[in-house]
Length: 217
Length: 302
Image 1 (cartoon, chains in turn cyan, yellow):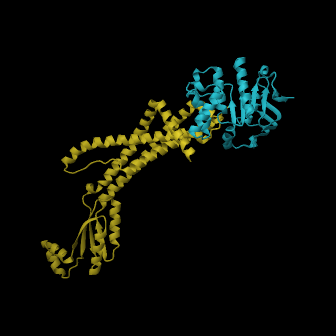
Image 2 (tube, helix red, strand yellow):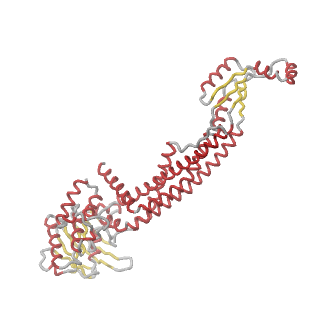
């Protein structure tokens, strides 16, 4: 469960990115966050993963108060969250398999079991045949899928994606969105920020619309 | 425990990979460390050698132990027994006062004087030859013997030994100063190496932090790397010394033959060698630790 209560975020330069944000997302729910660029979508997602801290207000993620979370506890919060980035943040010095392996190494997984999990995650995003490839040889869509595989390999309870379809053509974007839906169907809480409202025309899921740092009702 | 070991093993393997990726730069910095370290190690080795040969430099150390005039026979026997038990004593000889007087009387001039005295004024004495040990140990030995009951005075000409010891002490201070300065240099070299590594791994560190890596996980390969470089530097210094000692010994053989003595330089013993390697590894770790502490926190995902 994710809960925002009177959350404000002001950056050091005085810009108010988020103003008086309050909402609750239940476990297993799938929610879209929309808004123009600069509306505060990314900032909102970063607050959940404690990449940014709120200026005031309370944020609770899985029962933990993010505003008061110690620095040393942040890694353990993030191990419960899968992050998908628009710019992928893939490491180009290692192959596809090793990229997906990274979260499991970090959380101290037994190697044999970790390999099985990596294969399962790569299979889910359709990259199993490319496990030995270098990321540099992958297309934009493939890189995005690699990023998703890395985000889900450690089976987080929350999956957060910031503009996951940003640079992809329509068909590809649809594929990616279907992938997120399938994670939602197995019980993962999914949050997707997107400015692409075309994709959301007949979605059954909740939409949180941000406008200039405020939630539009 | 097993998982913990696995993590350390993985960090170690990763360290080796970093190392192989830039072999030239790494070997270069190891050589710098090794050469810098071989200087204090060399002076230290020389001192150790001088110290172990200090006896040979000053001749055979001899004591004269004079008994009190009223010392009893039992006390003399007790002293004899004590001397036999002392580890550092090579051999000793008892000289009774009659024999001493006789020896003295062999000198014609003195014979007349002695004739006039009547009673024998000389004490019983022991002449003691000790092993080649350091001046401070000789001094200790003298004090021990002086404290035995029935002993009037123990004489020992220790000025040469004291002089040598003082010089060795100056040498030790020089070693300490060199070691301190060059250790600081080693820490700085590693500090800089690790700083460069952190900067080139910026992306990896950022991503690792984003997916829940603890600081320990991120630090570990860098700390291993520092320790490994320190170790390799120490090993290089040790090898440089080994070659140096070997080369010098080849020439020393010629010199020693001319002096008909047997003087050979010895390399560091096992204990000193292990200390050297542990110390240089620790310094490497320290450099890495400082580097990690001053740069890693700056890399935060945005």
